[in-house]
Image 1 (cartoon, helix red, strand yellow):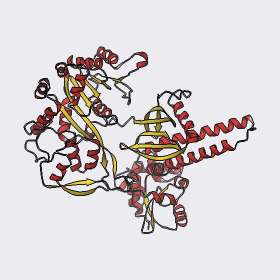
Image 2 (cartoon, helix red, strand yellow; image 1 turned 180 degrees about the horizontal axis):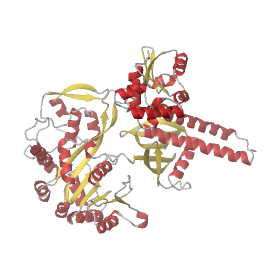
Image 3 (cartoon, one colour; image 1 turned 120 degrees about the vertical axis):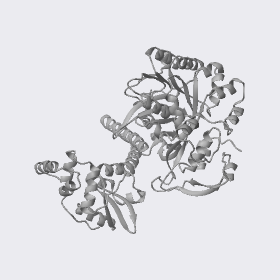
Image 4 (cartoon, one colour; image 1 turned 45 degrees about the horizontal axis):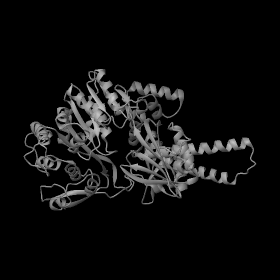
Length: 595
């Protein structure tokens, strides 16, 4: 690639308005005093961002800019250069096309490095400009975490060999030194496993002993995948290390244990919840990773349909009542409720939470941790919260009659209460509360509504494949589809951006039942849940959220799913038709009602 100058960098920046003449003069003076390049001086002084500098160099040198955070990276290309060289020379190879190696660099004028790369690889180069932060992040994401894990594992395997070959007459100080080396290798391996899990967006890490070895699996986008196999000889060392950092008893191997600690990667802080489970092949450790910033996202980013968004916003504007979120473990209930609190958290509002555990910490909300060891239950915490002059209360989970009764009483005395319940769908929540011993008449005195939700994998938008299907075929799969027209759906394919999976991230699927007088009346009349559900599917039933939308935008377009309430499978189908997920994913996470 030919590089040339049109004009000096400072002149270019002032000409396009990115820099004033006074700022340029100050920067030139600082450059003369301290040495170095003008661009780096401008960034250091805060006059330019790294990206602005890279964009300016793109125009000055005729070298294209690449955003490495979103660029497709070929894993095989990463093997052409040592990681240490990438870090030292600030260069990152990411593509090989037509025998030309595409590389990102911070300094495209470093001809010595570029010539060296050409000699080492025997490829012609296509050079791109990247920011230092993005380049460093790309190396960490695509190279360093995996390399560190492999290196740490190799070191541990060396230590195993040393143990077996060690001389019984080794001096005491040599034994101490050897033990220290082994401990350091274990620490590095554990840290590498955690770092790689965070980079891979894993929600859970499973370290599971088997008969012959120990498997390490990450749960990414709700699906477990094996990432490494570890020799059985070091399994106990890894578990012990995790017990230490998690504050667990390292001498206890017969009973399950829970632990917790905080970790920081870059500028991101994580809460790690550990659970150790004794099995026949040894202790299994599962670690849940909770990104402290992940839930502060607001309702607009929770994948609600327009109808459900209108419904949930109308609920959180109410002055009092009980609203429940249901779904299995890992379905995003906590994220939803924390996002609600994030929206409602204002200086004029007093919010308290009672949780077990406190998964994410708000800087300006009072959060209580339930502690059974000191006989502090959800019901105890909720009763105490009611004496704190609250406006809004979040109860982490309703597990028993006492907590449910107290929550309903709180909702009847001027408080807005949010909580979770374990049921498969929204309507079943009433039956679950009835089973707990609360009469329907008392339930409906406080209950506003219930939302059920699931998380489905989101299709990779770079490689998803469209295909056609008729409405009749969709109905055969159990979905409610009014039209017989041919519609476009999408399936997973797999590309470099999504790691060949075809999916990247997850999307929420929801159903919200608001307990209007009509719905309450059906329950109080003793109708079965299946009969009530059929009634809500009738075209004559108009959900509150749809009425709100109709008032805001009369008319509108004809929906593909006509009339009645939209349940989980309906919402999933709509998101499949929008190309956000696949029909197969909806079937995987939602019980489709059938024809």
